[in-house]
Length: 227
Image (cartoon, rainbow, N blue to C red):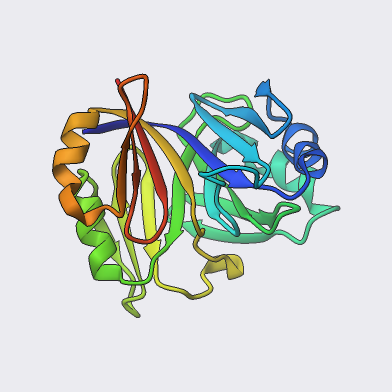
């Protein structure tokens, strides 16, 4: 139903400082730019930085994770440690470092099985939700499968085109928060998506190119283009 993550959009106050962080500090390649937004390559996924001038706006204080090759991790740590207060967490044999961008998004760089060099994909996005059970039902209908539940029952981890964490309001690792009004784009089957969410979506909008834009119960936008 949803096959790949095409983009994650973040809201930024000033494009200049955001571009310095992502383009220079993190060394990401620019794909496109106009007066209101710029997109960077994270493997096959776009990271879109967007001024708050239209709807969908892009997410605020969003926690998400970039994929980096495992053998680059120490170099990334050394590169960033002098300027940023880094946090580290270990998941099995994989390490992740955490830092904050100029707009308060918690950026994770995690060891994964990617070719690189550098940032080569987005493997996790965290959404803040008001009702965990309602949000779980919505995303399970879209083909995401539950793989973990938090001990305090304030979060759920699902797996689909990427890992999707649903958090009721709280601070997570590195004091991260789930994103608000996050804008996600997918390749998939727009007709099947509309049938799956039914009346549980707050709105469903057909797009001129045959895709569909859905507003979920918590105000997050999902755009699905035909794969």
